[in-house]
Structures are given as C-alpha cells and as structure tokens.
Image (tube, rainbow, N blue to C red; front, side, top):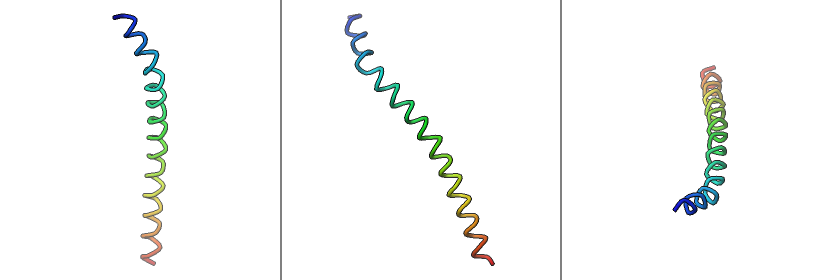
Amino acid sequence: MMEDFLIAIANYGFPIIIAVYLLVRMEQKLEKLETAINELNHNIKKLCEK
C-alpha cells in the first residue's frame, strides 16, 4: 500500500508541480495582457473623441 502511494507520487507529483508552476506564470502574464488591452482601449476611446 505504501509503495503504491510512493510510486503514484513519483509518477504524478512532478507533472503536477510543473503544471501548477506554469499556470501561475501564465496567470501573471494574462494579468499584464489584460492591463495592456484596457490601456489600449482607453487610448483608442480618447483618440476617437478628438
């Protein structure tokens, strides 16, 4: 039973850690992208008002 648990951790633990790490990094980049899109939208609205 314990051996099966350790094998499962060895087989699935590393991919899970990598997936979580990549999701966290992607979330930060998506937040920056959202900010840039909002700024672009704001600037386009200002240009259209002129």
